[in-house]
Image (cartoon, rainbow, N blue to C red; front, side):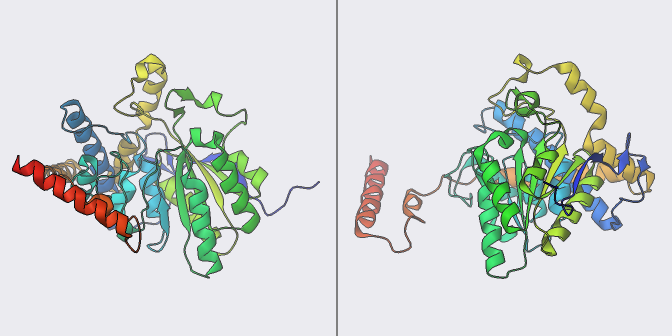
Length: 371
């Protein structure tokens, strides 16, 4: 049986920034304004600084749990930037920069980490499971891969209603071993659903290496089995990520269906604050990835274009430090979610038994306060 000729599988890794970021592939370099370039650098620096601050706060006992995106900033910020404002994002839990790009206020991000009354989700999710509806950024889910068929179903519904949007769903290499991955890509292939499957291959599924996830020579090649396009990209190259995601979005808009993007990167830190990678990871391999730091490569690219300089770095660092300090001050001052919020968003029309439980909870709370 012949393989469909319209299926595009690009296994050779796409890159725009060569080496340290000073050499550029002009053919695939996305044309961005100076303002956009500065904003993208600001978002990458903001994301890294927020991660660093939250990790230190967790060690101080001020935050219960945190998941860092260290080393993966280019992958999620670049791909989110390539979307249209009407497109929807189905996140994993390591994409804070995409939420910031979509306009999520820093203080509300902090509130979700604290789980207080300023949290959009009313303290119902664990830290790093944020959502921002105004930015079409859906809630994170802990079970691995569940967001994949959700993103496909949402896009399929939009296609049926003839609405013009695509969905982008983030997941890690570990999720490719889950049934939800197969279900999502298979359905998207059959019905030409406008979904971009963005796999951040950071080489680790907590402590399980990529070699224990698949026998395929890469993850992008898996797209062939589902009849969708597949491409590998240097996930530490912001410009390459923007370029391939834009191409995938354009394919989706033209009715050509879904694309699986394998963004090859490396998890530079622990899986979470509950993990110690020294037990299972080879430090020598991590050291090999340090020169590929996405923030530093993009910085050198901007410097070669006469955009970045030490003065700009100082200004952005000062601005970000002030923004984080103010957001933390506001977020830490807020109380826990009110007790009655437990009964919100359960039913469209509140049944009598739930109203009774709500009244009882408020009475008990009032009694405790008097004591």
